[in-house]
Image (cartoon, rainbow, N blue to C red; front, top):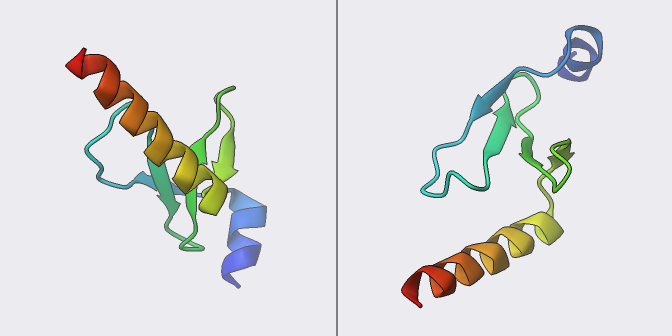
Length: 67
């Protein structure tokens, strides 16, 4: 039934609290899946690829801020 609600009415996203504001993460309240935004601003499912990508980007930004 939860899948049906998301297909019929659309996802209801709530932001997941995170330190980084550059890489927002969201969770669907109906389906309990996590999403993020890709480089083009589209919502994509938060998979292991995107989690690793976020960690790499945060390390890169923190290295740039330290310089």
